[in-house]
Image 1: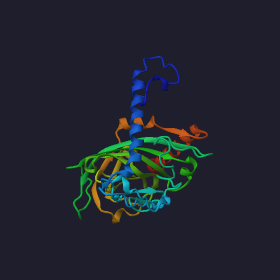
Image 2 (image 1 turned 120 degrees about the vertical axis):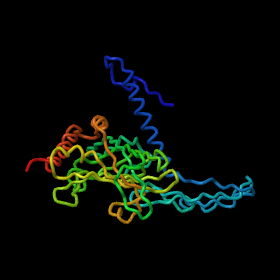
Image 3 (image 1 turned 90 degrees about the vertical axis):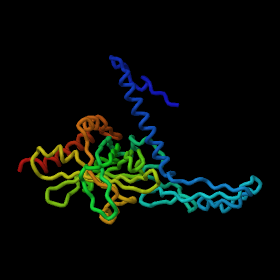
Image 4 (image 1 turned 180 degrees about the horizontal axis):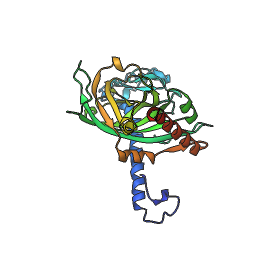
Length: 323
């Protein structure tokens, strides 16, 4: 049992803190659900355990050095664990089930130890400053018939939303590397995927060069399993195009997205089957809320936020500024 009360506040706030306590309790509940869902996701699709009636002949657990376990006296003939969708360990997919699964000290989700820490509070690397914030988007995706072309029209679209924590593990490295890549964790919610699904692995790239001169892109790649255990990838980008400053809000708040079959890596979108396509948007109210979620860990957190904002606004000035 978890108790969320005024003890979380560092001191008296003056006014009645009931709404503040309620907001903190809601945030805590969301984080608990997200962290538990992310741990349970790899088990999605596990079938029933088949139990017979005679005696256990053997249970193969080669990955931990056990060849067989004989327990003939308990009246169980065999235990069969069917294969389930793989867990991504670093850059390597590890299938679960009757196959050998070497776990050891491997890590999951871009370097974070499996089951370590809360999703919105990244591990602190010694001597580095981490920065993270939360983004929410929602919109409509239109189903694409097999072999058909993806359409971005909202006509007949199905609702989809996501809430992700974008984590920059090292702000200095993020600002200097041309990919400007960060991790993305959280959930996707869509009825065509079976409701709310935890993200198994995601990435975010800020202001990478586009296809034309002066163009920038914000790229999102969110991999997950749907309710039927099928791997899916939500891949999308925001087009930041040179033009009138009046386009700034439209460009930075509109995500052109496609739902792809499989867990698709960068560069493989053209070869992947498209399940649905459409646009997601961030609402002004969501933007205001996002600005309140910026957090840092490590030395000089204020300086890290300042450098990030200077980079963000500087790139927008390069695209939309005069000249």
